[in-house]
Length: 367
Image (tube, rainbow, N blue to C red; front, side, top):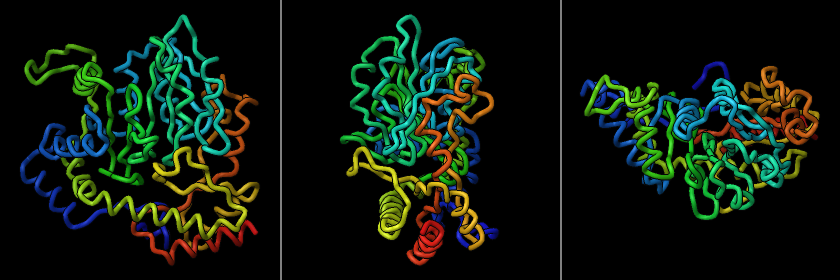
């Protein structure tokens, strides 16, 4: 546990089996990205997600860059993103020379409002839509059915916060062209750093597999079929994730139970939770609450009590390097969430007593 905080913001689910798996990979001298642990992690996670094609990558940002590269993003092409959420996809697209357009989020789901998505599509250009499934939730994805059939539209699901969330029977991250996930230390499954990418068909899978490994194939090393990168996940890091996959049902149930306790204990306060678009399939990665004008006071009171928390994500309208979004009054809900949301501790080893203590501090600050 982080000694700075009595109750840290996050804590990974690791056990003695994790140490054994890591040592097995070390003793086998399988350190780089093509070892048994990596192959097992890819196979097991693909199976859990009912995905035909999946690849591990070095981190969640690499997963998004690989997704853009695989789908052929080039300078000047259009990328459409939500105005509020963790802005990795927009940073990557910006660095690749894309033209970026932001759409406001829905004030209830906290995800992209898709009512006006058709108006954003350029008929004479390739369009990339990035759906950020914030805190395990999603937009009302039925509203994108017509758009996804257009030949010049590519859809990427940023499911870094939505591993094991389901929308109408299918896992988020597997519904469209490509889905990306993160294995950062704060995520549901962690390898320290790392990530995963699911692909909608074999052609995309083969391209992504080449790009992930310098554009080379095992059959012809040092010959670059494509101008690829090195996005492979170390086999040592893959080994860290195996015991978590084995205990995934325990992890899911613990995280759900903790979220439910937060909801019950804070329902009579002024805190507002997001509204899941698919309540049955919603699996919360994090606990976010809207605290109105008291957001900063809540964070300060938690900090004083030795409890770590986070302010919510920034609105794109506040980011200095996105000129097109500066002062964008159409990102109204994004700006509200950016000023009101607090992210609370949420991890399997969090006890009922800890959650109650956190809720008491929040309630007193709000009421």
